[in-house]
Length: 120
Image 1 (cartoon, rainbow, N blue to C red):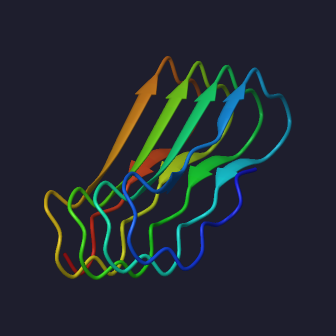
Image 2 (cartoon, rainbow, N blue to C red):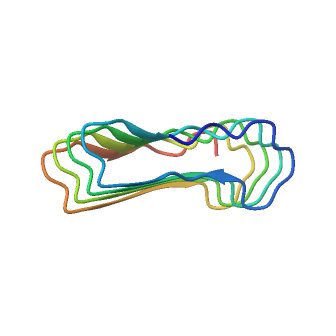
């Protein structure tokens, strides 16, 4: 797990990025960055490779009033039998290109969905 980055007022490329390779039967998740008032490229990125039978999710980046490129990106490769989803970027009041971009390759038997960016 990657723990939460808390109370970052101003920073460049502040984010939480776990890299999990070949994980079987566990929960892999990136927790949200909280309290980021002003910063460029703030995001939560989860990269999970060869995951079998687990729940992989990227939680939303929450209340960041001003920041460009507000987004939550999830990349799942070779995932079998898991629910993979990228949740919405919530509370981005002012931002450039807010969105949620999931990239899923070779997925079998899973529910994949990308929810819309809210309040952008």
